[in-house]
Each structure stands twice: as C-alpha cells, then as structure tokens.
Length: 117
Length: 110
Image 1 (spheres, each protein chain N blue to C red):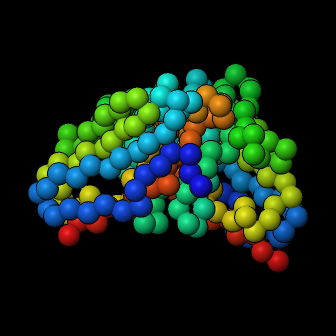
Image 2 (cartoon, rainbow over the protein chains, first blue to last red):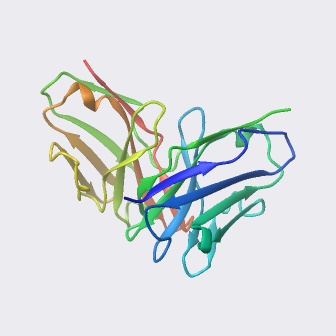
C-alpha cells in the first residue's frame, strides 16, 4: 500500500523560502507522476506542479517563477521549494500520486505552512 | 476564485438522493474528464469518482458521476450521515496545462 508523507517547517518568514519533502513508502516512484497541491484556509485547492518519473517537472504558470519540484528517486522522495513567500502562501500543502486521466488517487496527510514574521 | 464552479452548500435527509453540480468551460470540462474528491474536516481529499463515472475500489455504488458538455454532477443516493463532508470537482484545463478544481460543496445531512 503506497503512502505519502509530507515533512518540513510549519512556519516560514515572509520573503524566505518554503521547503517541503514528500516521502513515498510502500512502492516505487516509477512509473507514475507526482504532484504538489495546496489548500487555502478558505478551502480552495490549487495545483502547484508535477514531477514526472522521466525527470521532467511542470508548474502552475501563476507560480512558475518561484517554484521548483525535484526528486531523489534513490530515496523515494520528491520536494517542493517556493521562493519569496508571502502571507498569501499560507496553506495546507499536499503531495499526491497522479494517474492517467489526470486524477490523484493517493494523497499525503498534508502539511500546514504558515507564512508569518 | 476557482476555475470550476460549485454551489457552496447542499443538504439532504438520510435516505434521500442529492446531486452536486460543477460547471466549467470548453478548456476544461468541455474537452476533458471530471474527477470528484471527498474531504472530511482536517483530512486530505480522497478520490471518489474518476474519469467521469468510475469509482475506485471501496467507494460505494451510492456515489455516481456524470458529465455533459461543460457541466457535470455528482449524485449520492441513499444519503447517510457519514456522507457529510465537502466535495470537490476537478478536471484538466488545456489553457492552464494543468488540473483545476471547484471551490467545494459542503454537504449537510439533515
């Protein structure tokens, strides 16, 4: 049974960098694709980006200048970095496994990240 | 502002049938399939329906989905108290080149 677990700081100062790691257990990262998705306190969901097992990443155009998603397949982990954060980046960040048809069948429990000084 | 539009709330009595709508545009629902997620407070979304009307293993057949043009709906029959949750629709968007979500519908079982 594949499980995902997000980890990283829960508090980030404005203008600094948000960094989260998603650890995949119970299965391989190949040949799937993996996503970061965030949920604002008001409950809306927003796709951040994908990491594809072939080594390519794609991003939401609204975040593209600030975001990077990388993976360490040897550790079964993929990461999210978001630069120059503001209070508007405060959200619960989820990692998820993507399937053909662009849906997400397995989600992590989520990591609340608050941007505040 | 979410790309897909859902009513913020819905309700029904136990045993009733409830539908939740989701509307989009030609770049998302008009040309791609729809997926639905169920979320309980404090937990992650859970895949409920994929590819318009397919249910993952373990999801009761009381849940069904449909899509027509740029609109879609989730139907829950034989409503149970355990169905009280928020429901989100999602689809691929060709303009964004990524997935988009609805704002969510909070279902109350009366």
